[in-house]
Image (cartoon, rainbow, N blue to C red; front, side, top):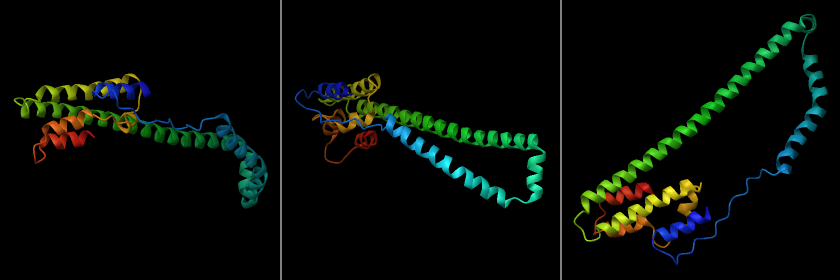
Length: 193
């Protein structure tokens, strides 16, 4: 990831720009962090189960206890059916959540590509006869190369955005297109950042 940030500084033409120090967050997946809560829950369940089972049994009347004792197979079948139904609810919620995350990822990716395409079209239509047209296209190419480099190296976009170099390609486009009143290009660049 740091190579992508360093490459970002080189891509945008600022070889002297030093990226800020980036610290990767600790995942907290050490064995102690995972095992201690599980062991505490096991110990708590071991200590509380006898008293909870006695409390539930004291709430049942003799008829209910007789049904449970006399028809164990039906009781076990209902128990397993209930657990499978509960499991299917949990699984459906989990899959729904994962599909929703994937959908929002594709929606964000589509929005990013659509805005970049819109920016390229606007630069072509609005700035074609300006002397800085090639510089604008070079900045657009640098922006796209940053995105491709971040994807290839598996670098999160937040890291690329957080370690901004001195010459950001989108800011170069803003600077080259600004003439007094912000234009349509400004709105497009703002929506990309």
